Image 1 (cartoon, one colour):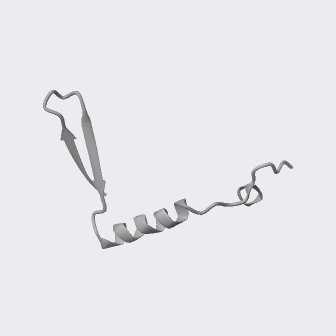
Image 2 (spheres, one colour):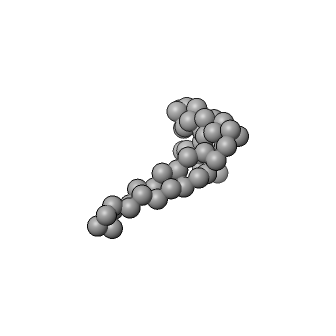
Length: 51
């Protein structure tokens, strides 16, 4: 990832801008976007299961 920091003139605020460094990184972020919207039933993630 490429990171650019923008700072307000009074130094009271900062903004970090992150962007993919290349095509491969962009594709990986696209995959995370898809995976991040999926919902899994509680049993799929081990919630409520005790030995």
